Length: 454
Image 1 (cartoon, helix red, strand yellow):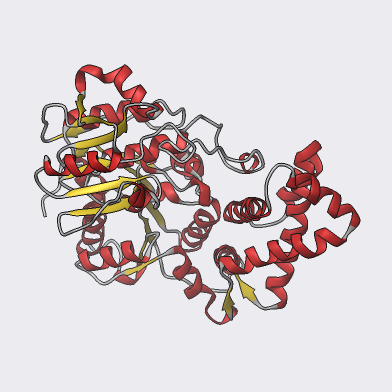
Image 2: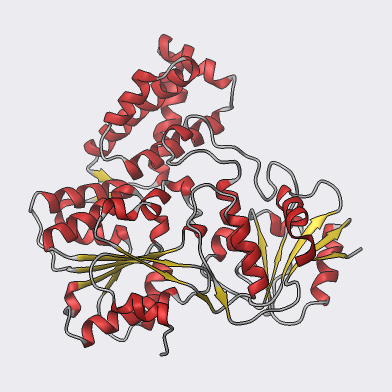
């Protein structure tokens, strides 16, 4: 396999390294090349190398491409392997939601003080919304905090309605921890926290001296602490690869600050950019990169594509969404990936999949590419793109970085734009169109094509 100069620099880098790899830059092939380089040059043995990726699908994809047999794992599988006999049963999301709902419907309705708090909060939301809020809070909290101290501090310092929220969350969190302990269960965050604890207490021996993390922008603090514990014990090195522009899982507890501030966690770390893009047109990537930099916390990149075409971003205005999609599909040559903000978009636009046409949500499309892309649901509405649903004020207390309007949605739109190898069509209603469409027209009118399909 041939590598460009940036990839070679990353492959041959020694020591702790952050590789900033934009869309279409050959991130996976660089990881494959890195492993090959380490083994062929006798820098590390096969059993001393560990690759971590975030999903079983991505783990299997890397395994299929590797020339050497090294350990490739998700964070949770790694934690399970470390814990071995120290765990019996894994708790799932249903267990936590069940505890939250039972607490609210039983204890909170019978305890006088808690009932007052519960009824007060129900004025702002219904039962299901409150359950989902508390569930999201606990999940995000456990992804970044290994003990309850920070939650106590949030409760003690809060006032007015926030204090009510934190009172309920604190009570439910304690009940949840006790339930896990009494049933000898661990949730996915516990796996990572307890595995880290075993390593720090010298109760387990690991051989890994070179750890590679794929999609590092999607990491959380407890995951990072697990890897840090491993390399601290083995005097190892960490090689992380990712793209801050494609960090789209903040809602699940991911901390983009780990990526952006990597050198503050590992002060001797190298930073290497993969500047070449082998997927997109230059005109498209120039607009996409400029668009994403409206966010405050992003790393500026120079991206060089190896092809270009005339106005690859096309805004398609319509009056009838279903008829317009059918008509647009007849005008496109090649395979088409239709992207929606939500699963329901497929039904709303009557998308019919076949061998040339497939539908995915933008979140599920990450890492994929197609000849042409159509982005639907570009309304200016609560469930449109960008989604106008704001994070609850309680969640903002534990989500990292300053709040910037549409910050995550802007990164999600970047991911959608950069799936296309040729053209991307933004299917947009004539009236009430997305603020992102308005911004593209305002800033890049001469660089995009506008089509009226009806």
